[in-house]
Length: 212
Image (cartoon, rainbow, N blue to C red; front, side, top):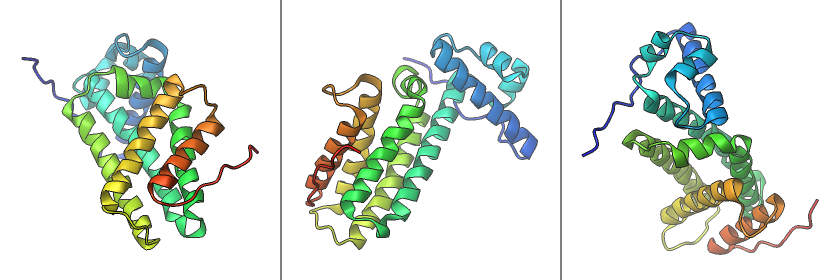
């Protein structure tokens, strides 16, 4: 039976200086993982890249897995904030336009650091804490999207389930598209096809836009 290693941060930064150190360590970890991969991205290399002692790394993180969890949580929170801004501005848009921007935002976020996302969510070991990060991310976005669908009076047998499936489907397809491509689609075509898929699922009409 595999022994579960602790992945919670040892020390939570309580001052701006401590938070800056944690951010520096996480930035360095992202750079090391992208350059060398998960296996070769050791805590020693992270410490060197961050310009701190290995003791400073272990002061906040008990091991490399804890760094991965913290990085995954930070990446998901950044993505969540961007998508929430899209949903908050939704009254100004048609549902089709909102869905298109929703898909565009998710694709753009994954495309910024595809190597890091592959390492964090495909290659690295996934302790329960990583799954918990993903679950919190999906739940938050699904609840926000469900509220949008409710205000727009979108009829669905289970609106909450529909919102969860929209979030999970878009995230999964965007992740796969950015890392591996799908059916030789370029980014514009991919966004249009996924928008049409979601619009039809939610019972709305989505017409193809001419490429800009």
